[in-house]
Image 1 (cartoon, rainbow, N blue to C red):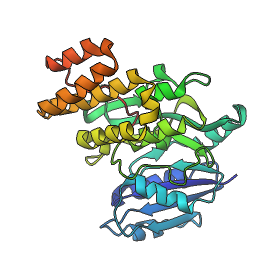
Image 2: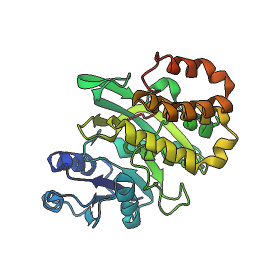
Image 3: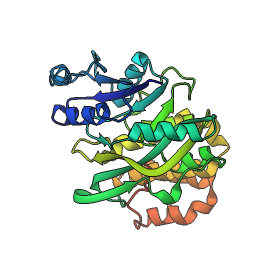
Image 4: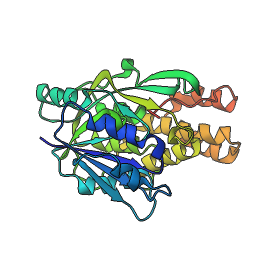
Length: 302
């Protein structure tokens, strides 16, 4: 069973080869590595061609579209039975693919995705960034379990980092898996849609080493907030019946507007959150009193 591994990159020629080699050196060898160059200004093709392995396919996009668009491009070239994703600044741990394929053979056939954990260098579990900080994400205590309301769980907390997971190719009916308008949190939006089509098995063992770069999307609060707004827009029908979860998302957006000093927008979103779920009044009150500046962690990875 071939695995298609999609690795999008925009520049990052300094760490790309290491990310590629962490895929190519996996003990499970029946794979193709599709490197999608998202219209880089660096000579990424030269870097990719420097790695001599017939399993590599290089694809260049003519226009920069972001990680979601690049991953969709890679999916269009994928020939495997399973799909995996790697980032250009992360490293897979040895045995990642074999471990996850073995898990698939031991769990129910209706499970369309297996995911694991990541050790992250450059931030801690409290979302503080800097040298010497290390995080284990997602934290094991919130593990997804088969048979639970996985959609409801994922609406509150994203447990899927794409690099950590392995997917059956038919796990979701959409030809394009990712929302190209979301410049951050696109993995969370995907996880929410995924849970509406299949079950997900979460293993708590780490399978990836992640590194927070100076240009990591997770450090861009504005882009992450736009991603939350996209989730609210694209999942209106689901959230209409899950107002507690929608309220938390609205609070997350309101908290961002609080930190950037846009009070009218903050009040609008917090008022909508309170209307959805009045029991969140204490949480909203703490924001209005300026006591809660940090956002609730939602993303398991950088």
